[in-house]
Image 1 (cartoon, rainbow, N blue to C red):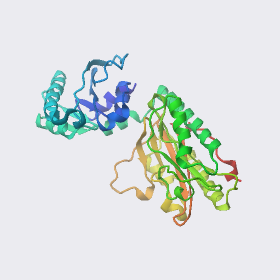
Image 2 (cartoon, helix red, strand yellow):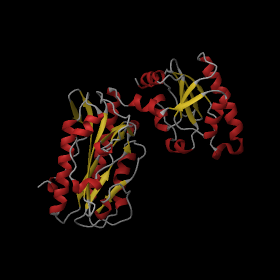
Image 3 (spheres, rainbow, N blue to C red):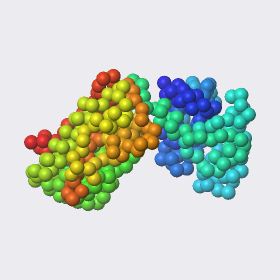
Image 4 (cartoon, rainbow, N blue to C red):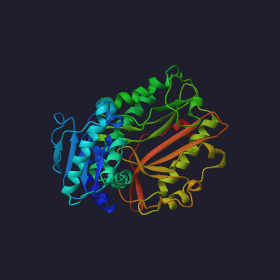
Length: 383
């Protein structure tokens, strides 16, 4: 399913092939994963995906990865270009690999090709262009391909969400005065690692005044009784799919203040309104235009989007607030069935001390959407 969608987008963008290096894109295209974080900054793996036919996987971990899918026609030793490995041989190795890639393009029936690349060493891009190839950005191709999920992908996302919710349970059970933000966030990291998950997009768990403005990562700050504690899971779980859920708690034994309850209840209203609104068949701009109107007192502290896609990480589409939608913005499109979206809410005042952050994941269906996340909200903050 994923390989077919990728090839459809390669052809739709009039490319001969895509050459992918990103760990997430490689996994999407090849169903393989090896040393994901290392390969994000020193890539030694790549896949050449033609618009038609079988792929060529360049992989230095050939003895580790077995049982490749049948749409990978050939596996070759990767050409290791990062300076960390190649040193001053990088230029020579690049020239050799350009010749190899040119041969692959010629096998497709073209002397030079239009090749889509996501991330690569600048030297490789320059040498491909010197050889006559046209290099274009592959991100649009991969993002469009991955936006609509198969039933298998939805099952993988459900597995990641299940792990994230176990982690949230551990966090809720361990919130107490005296624990640090890092110690509490480690509960989520432990659960993800124990269940075979992978990395985190960020480590956001904050408390008290560090919730406002939202977005800081966890620190050695000690959590105090009566403070709000907010967490955004942002984790890549088992099978390589993301669980992006946010919750806010209050540290007992102190009871929540009237202002904390007010912020929380506004966030709940925001979340419920937009979940009820979004559906397959609706335009992106229409959703932004009709979404919950953030009260002026919270405008400066609202989140950076109304909603965004989720797959192997945070994905397209990113839906800005309608007043941030530029007149010449070409991002407008239509939500499709089986897109997975994260619905965002961040409520706090610019002159306030705390923010409430909530976020739910949904899968879009014609005329409606279905909740994917089910972790309970805080009844004590809704009284």
